[in-house]
View 1 (tube, one colour):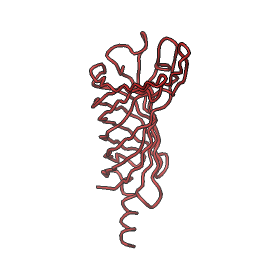
View 2 (tube, one colour):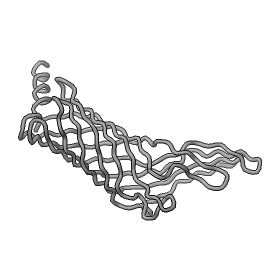
View 3 (spheres, one colour):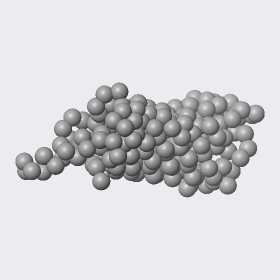
View 4 (cartoon, one colour):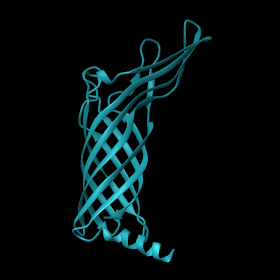
Length: 218
């Protein structure tokens, strides 16, 4: 057990040596929305936007160029999209409930990051991320009186296959053990849809991502 702890400790700090490669499997969650899609609906109802929660899983490889500076590239599966709040309203005296309205967009993402270590274990970072759309679905359910209708349709054909974005954030490695916490804000540069989703305005990803990983030197 003592030997294992010593190895873990050495691995935790080895990546800070210039010329060292490390790899970090990680898992976490996204909180996402889409710009210029603040409301959804028509006629007598409008739905306000809320954050959509999704999972993210992948791995990142890092090369330590100098003690304060490194470059990293990753590959991950990222669940993104947008969601709207549930709404009750009345049409011709009949109560209508709209629930679970969302657009789910799943990507294979390749982030390339530059990391600057302000002090040992803590880094600020920024870079570019290219995403490839794997699946896209629009979902909603509506209940009017005793009648219920659910909507679940693939909308991948209406979306652009590739998404370019800018991720920025911070990361921290827990002292003495190679546990790595990473928080990023991801700002989309590309239109999600082939056509404008809200008039003439662009609709782009806005994602907050939090992951936890196990980082070790190669």
